[in-house]
Image (tube, rainbow, N blue to C red; front, side):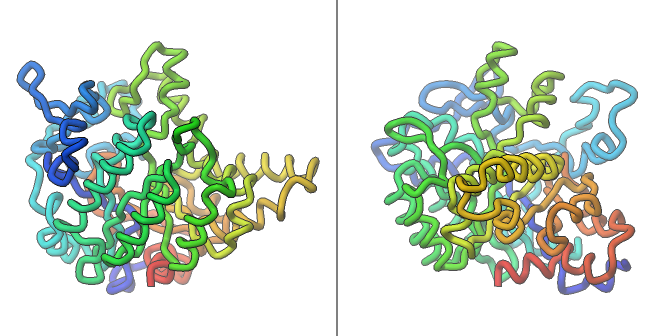
Length: 392
């Protein structure tokens, strides 16, 4: 399909900002003022969470970043030459104002042919896992970040950039208060980590009835619930094999890479919402997976269908029907969209470029060039119409 025919309708489900230092620190309450710090280590700035240096994001200031789409060839064609990670990433660039502020970003979107986008923070994905044993601190730090997002980006910038505030769930009452706070400030989509929810008595599924008041509020407000790839805590499991405790996505290793593909937190999140009945109790919930890929979908559906066949009395409804009704996916750009459409309703699959991350597309709208075999209507739905309907 000629991209010119999409003019005015392109809605990217996966754009990112690069947060400055103050994003996590400016609005921290006094009780948690030292919970997040930036420190110098051998001439490099690192982030320290609760006094412990984190390597989750090796360059947390983002003053220099990888070029957008630096890994595009790597993900499209592989790495037959066996280049190192540094070689694949290429030369770093200065962080552009468009990666930091909504005004310059809107100008860049005009150049790119993007009409609207969901905007996700980048650094925020380290927070919840590193505060998992302190629910009150988790809520305080997340709220501080949301205050910064609202002040600098806003949650709805000129009806074109929809920044996703983070909602953390350890204390349900606090989660509901945060949801009400962001909705009052114009949020149209929220971000929830696909992971078990830490709590005072240990982790548990957000699909359990304990969280029903939160899901009821989300459903009644018709807000889109996004679940973006994050640090979901699964590194603690692979760490038992490798002897490494912290998830470090930019330090590659074969077993860790395999684990990340074979053990998909998003699949577990969907299974929990389904098996614990949340998708049935709240049938109008809209859950969207972002940057979690889609290879896990066929296996998840097959396994749930098999379990349901053997013990239907334990399910409130057919789990496949619940998923087909409530789940939307923005897959990796290199995924097989036509094959995914065999397992999910085609109008539940949406375009996301992951711009300006190195693993994303340098030219977001070039995604349309890789949709051969789809009808014009399917391309239009995928490139923006479906997401527009979810947000409007």
